[in-house]
Amino acid sequence: MQNVLEFFRNLPRKKCQQCGNDIHEKADCYGNVCDSCDHPAR
Ligand SMILES: [Zn+2]
Image (tube, rainbow, N blue to C red; front, side, top):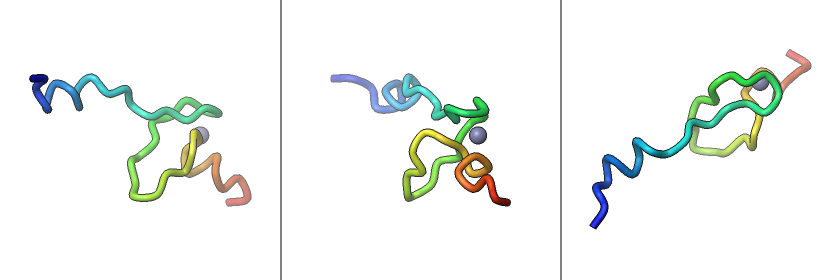
């Protein structure tokens, strides 16, 4: 049986597909872009 902690440790971090910044995990998934790129108007 696989160690749960190891499983999460091996998960790749989400990165913005536009600027490459790390995406902060939230309850709702923004997709593949960070907060800044998701709301370019601001
Ligand atoms: Zn971005």
